[in-house]
Length: 152
Image (cartoon, rainbow, N blue to C red):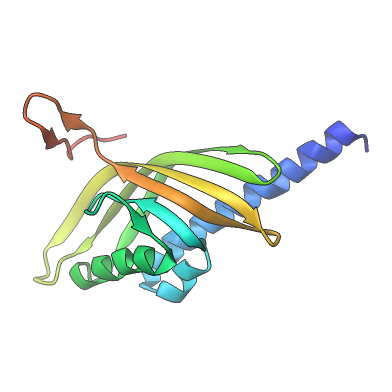
């Protein structure tokens, strides 16, 4: 195998590892399991989430956001569509559409809303971990309000 084939094979292995990590996020949310989610994020992850403040720093802050989700969704479901990845040897990023849905405490089912999600990964001690993520919704410039009814 020449060096180009070796790099291509390694890139494929890394991409598959990152896809598995995103799958762990989905599985951890569905299981309401903060410890599964903890294993996906770097300890110093920086998250630009949909809720204030502008920046959430550290894995505990990120897990705190997921813990809040678990208080208002009895059976959370996270769906990922159109995931695209760019992978290099030590750093990678991915972007997709994500939707969080489930059942509210009063028993009402909610379809949630689609967000634009971006993940930045770094290979740390041989594992791909999320070092930055961002979730956003487009907004209507005239009204200044988020547009939450768009579909991918």
